[in-house]
Figure: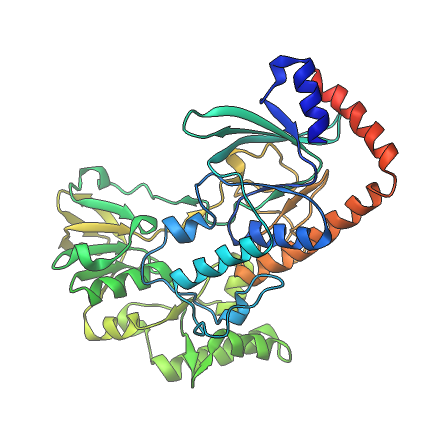
Length: 424
């Protein structure tokens, strides 16, 4: 099909290098979700194009993750379709090892994304039955347009950093960074650092700061579930998955909380109040992930990490808390999470909600109408993304093979659509 458009380019020079018809689906995002979908499509024999706004695959891991990061779940729950992790990798692979795995994965399935290509908008053209995806590419921000039958949104749950609007933050005067910019606690040695947020990132950043002889204070505004990463040498997540096969959700939650109390003790006396809803029920209904403790709780118990309540306001070099306490602070790390960026570019309101997630709950949120798909929005980590990728590739593969059974009719139909599109 691209040859057809090159011919149109030669006949009508004003289209040259401005747009092309994708021979197969267009995948937006070259993170684990996009790579998994591309690999499954390759197995189906379906050609594809992958767009990536950064200059590398898995930019969240390569550019926006701290140095000490490891997978929080055992590797067997984080592998992408068709390829397990190397046997010599530890149970919880490091950031470097996970990136190596993804790069090897892309090479194995011959996935070559178009880097530095940022999608500006995507809309469905009812007349032609195609998606029209406009991008800017390279340092010169050249505009380009892709025309495709199938659009796979793989930009993920964590495309943009969330920076809260806190009173007085602009007047603070010290260093303020988001956790996505944090690499190591080494540069903060000897400083009083306020970590805003108590999720997995907030806990791990606080632990890293304490290990580098900084003095972290972690802001805990709301309730949080903290579970041991392992119980008697067995992954807590693995135990939960096993129990879910036989027991109802509420009972699994009860058992997990009993195990957490036995291993970690009563954490509420350290300022960590548990939610009324169980950890798995909260994850499924609200998407809020429980914290898997890897050492931060011991630092909290020893006083190396201070737990403080919510923030009232900042002033120069200080923060006032909601309980009236004031702290001298040198630097601030905002471990305030991420969000989807889909609403900023996808012109569609039926499949995706305003928060950038599919409206249909798991496991039905992977397919929309008109050839629109979503991968990696399940709030179930890499295993959820893999499940989506397999379903999407099978669905597109079926349609692709059906169309290619009658190549002559398909060529005529595409030619008619090309004429319609060429009039824009």
